[in-house]
Image (tube, rainbow, N blue to C red; front, side, top):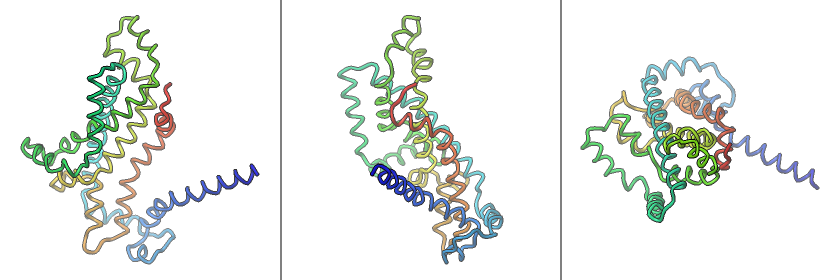
Length: 268
């Protein structure tokens, strides 16, 4: 009976893995074929990879788009980790009634859809002359209620004895945070980095509004423009999607162990 249960679990996991990997495999195959072959449902590698890459480079400023996406994602991720971890640390370590009420109001902000603040954000950045800049994309998401909550929850498992020992050794509050808290919470930072990087890298709606010239476009906007053309070339689109997807896949595989630990709230 136990063997049958184990077999059923493994069979389910195999099916789930195949279903999850199929879209990416389809993209890899599609990027080597012509648009007509993809439409016909050809499921074998072709010989059009170099041609599709060349056409993509000729049709778009892919290098600039990649650089824009990288700049926004890296700077935004670093800023979010620093500010959100400091806020989560402060809310959990230095508890008070006033801070608890403030945190409750912060949680309420999670109920507000982004569409409700799009127009005020656009007007604010327009008045500040910051539209069509990476800053306009980074700032609205540099601290989020979810990420502050994530750090706060993980800080609950942080051993307070380390802080007390640091204070006995004469460390100030800033040095306690930088030299004791940050190294101890590496898995949490890794998990938060993956989530935040993916959010910035794949962000579409706000960059579509805030970035108004071609030289400032990000990779998701380039993919969208290719897909919305009158006669889309699906081979070129597949190449663009694979290029857009690879950085997040690589980062996840590099940090997957720490990601699991961070999501489980473990501290080392």
